[in-house]
Amino acid sequence: MLRKPSALLAASALLLLGTATQATADTSPPAAPSAACTYTPAVPADNFKGIPVFDPVKAAKPYSATLRTGQGAITFRALTDKAPCTTYSFKFLAQHDYFDRSHCHRLTTARIYVLQCGDPTGTGSGGPGYSFPDENLTGATYPAGTVAMANAGPNTNGSQFFFVWKDTKLSPAYTPFGKVTAGLDVLQKIAVGGEDDQNGPGDGFPTLPVNIKRVQIKSR
Image (cartoon, rainbow, N blue to C red; front, side, top):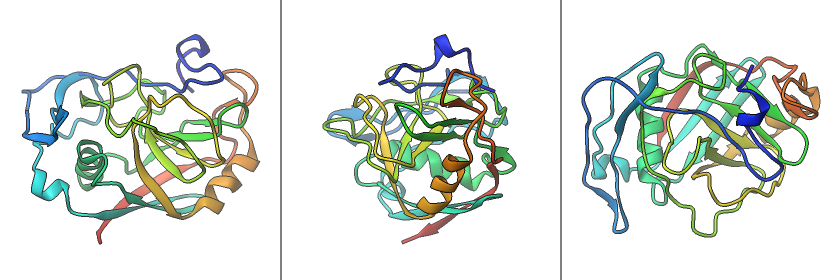
């Protein structure tokens, strides 16, 4: 179950989430010469775990993340050198069990080829209680195995993200922050299972339930 199709995606646009929250704001040192890494309170604040305080030294440390799902494990290498704000946020949420017992709520099998996850409400409208800026967009492409942030417009990143299971063309508007290193076959199996077309042909809830049991972070 997602937002109404009109709020979602056209052939070249992906989507989702609106974020913002409660709690006090935490700002951080610059993550790159061109942008400050700031996590801003935003709504909604579903399964609220707090707001991360960016630490550039910790953010630079490489790691991999493994999602243990009911369909199999999916592992990706975090692009900490290219998207430090994003990878730091993902790690923060994973280490606070934010994604545990959630499910991937959207699969697209036409025009764009993605599996979207990261919303604890399973509606496509949930968020962690904060937002942060886009990163790594210059020349961004989305080949199979890309892990990128879903959003509701520029600089509205929260907790929702998507896996690209087949080479797809999207405008460079979704922060790429990981590369799948194991489990692309799992994503393709999910895609072959199809979706319920709730948002139109080739866009809906995956037929094969993708329940995330836990997310494991491993330093590299």
